[in-house]
Length: 298
Image (cartoon, rainbow, N blue to C red; front, side, top):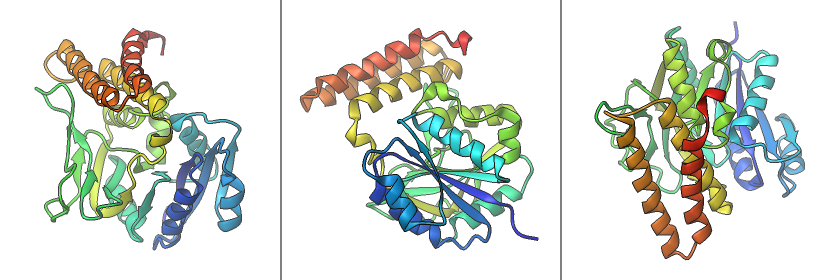
C-alpha cells in the first residue's frame, strides 16, 4: 500500500528563479507519493511558461491577477483535495527543503489522529544553522505569543516533536480531515496571520499543531516582500489587528492594542529614517482599518 498522497502547493508571484530553486529541492525528496502544484499569482516575468518548461511534471494553475497569499493557497488546496490529496503541504516559494523533510512531517502527522498540522524546523537560508521559526505559544501575561527559537543557533536543543499554538505556513503540512472539518484559510487576512488564524481554529476543533524539528527547510525571508513593502506593511498591520481582535491575548485587549500601536510606531520611525513616508503611513492605515473592520460581518 503506497503512503498517503501529499500535494505540495507553492504560490509564485514574479519570482521564477527562486521558485525554480524551491522546486529543484523538492525533486530530491525521498517521499514516495507526492505531487507539486504551482499556483501562479498573475506573474509578469514569464514564470508560468518558464517553470512549466523546466519542470514538466509539475502541475500548475495560472491566476489572471495577484489574488493574495490566502486566496491563491485556497485555490491550490481545493485542487489538491479534488485530486485525492490526503495531506496538503503549503510551501513558500522562497525556500528550499531537505530531502527527508516531507517524510518526517508525514510520519509525525500519521502518529496521531489528533494531529492536524505539522511544521518543520525553518532555518535562515543565508545562515543555515540559525533558526527562523519553530512555532509560537500564547502567553497568559504577554499581549502577543512567544515565538520559539527565532534567531537562535540550531544547537540541538530542539530535537524532538513538540506541540505549539501556531506555526508559520511558510511550510506546513495540513491533514485532509482537518480541512474538511474547519474549512480553508480565511481570506479576510489576505497576506499575514492567515496561518495563525487557521491554527487557532484547528485547536478549537480539537486538533493539535506540532513542530517537527527533525524535518528541516530554509527560508530566504520575505524576498517577495521587498518589492512592495508599503502594501505588505499595510496588510501585515491590518491582519495583525484583526487576529488579535478575534483571539485576544494577554490580560486585557487594551494592553494588546497599546502594544500594537507602539510596535507600528517603531516600524514607522524606521521607515521614516529611510525616507519612506508611504510605508510609515501604510502601517498605521492597516492598524486603523483592522480595528475599524466589523468582525461580526465575517
